Length: 202
Image 1 (cartoon, rainbow, N blue to C red):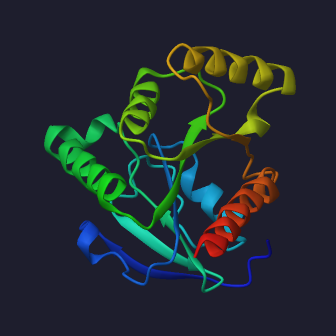
Image 2 (cartoon, rainbow, N blue to C red; image 1 turned 60 degrees about the vertical axis):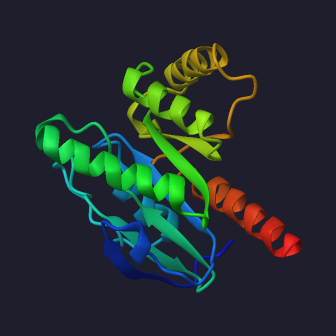
């Protein structure tokens, strides 16, 4: 898929105010500082589309970007940022849960995981919650340029083994490096494939 246009449409904290034009939405989520904004900019080929920051917890809104005038890429707030305080974390959790559970246009959720770390309890619990609620999702391992290929494979296998303890079937898994622009084609191909399936059903 070629990205011809990517434009920011709206930011908000209320799922009711999201666009109502029926276009499919692909949302990106992960723990704070997982490299979400960099990945979104790399995938869309628009350097400043999502704001990147060294400071975790920057995204606190649901951000909609219209891609090729055909589908939305949605940037969701990161979860688990400790320094937000209890009230702040609760607000973010409500925003995330309302969007994921109520947004019928959300076609697929991409859960971003930092490939350098072992399976984190917060990520595993989040994916478990997605499964319990029947939410379609895929995993993207980020920052693959930061470790060796063999270490990456080891870490991914640990994750697969952990997920297989509770999942009969694993979700699709992608790897990416925003620095080296790796994983872009595979992610876009996956989105394109789902869009085509939706068009055929329609």
